[in-house]
Image 1 (cartoon, rainbow, N blue to C red):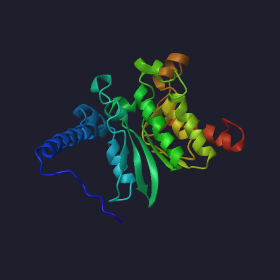
Image 2 (cartoon, one colour; image 1 turned 45 degrees about the vertical axis):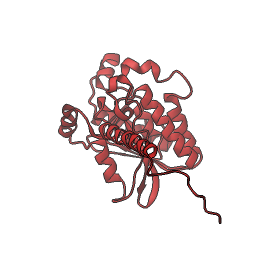
Image 3 (cartoon, rainbow, N blue to C red; image 1 turned 90 degrees about the vertical axis):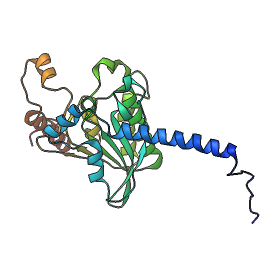
Image 4 (cartoon, rainbow, N blue to C red; image 1 turned 135 degrees about the horizontal axis):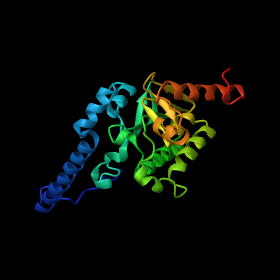
Length: 253
């Protein structure tokens, strides 16, 4: 085999200048990634601690096999949008190892407006699910989402590659036999409620997880009924699931 001889002079002034420039770019990238991953207002961290919740990366660390790598996707998504208030688009996604098997993790970052969905959050979710479909990788959803960020909700469903595509992609994964597991770690509202219901398995944290289309204030405004975000909603969700299994939606059997 003929050896390819490089004509690059690694000792030249030009090479050294390029090296310094690219190392500076790399340092800037790493700094921005560090900020997007870990810098949050103290009040938001205190709120989650008061609710006895973990931060999103603490959850992922506990999920993945110890000492295994995590290939994160789109770390800097949305970092220059929304006045910089939605780092990583409010979502952490990437490929990791669980019980020795590669899985694609998609986790709500509830330290950012309760995990609310922005238009670019939706695009990141769709792309993550596209990767799962293309590579037939099982999905683990860590769900703790407040639903759409209401001031921008008109930008969530305008075309085929926006929020509706999330649920379409979940159905495609089901059709091709790729398993999905949802861990409901907080309130999963509106669009966030569809994600666990379209998974093969849904695990809910007692007295913390909740799946519903509208929270108590919305229900009271619409119907006048006063309900809590915990027991009553979860009981209805469980009755509905039992009903589908028995062929009688809403059945108590």
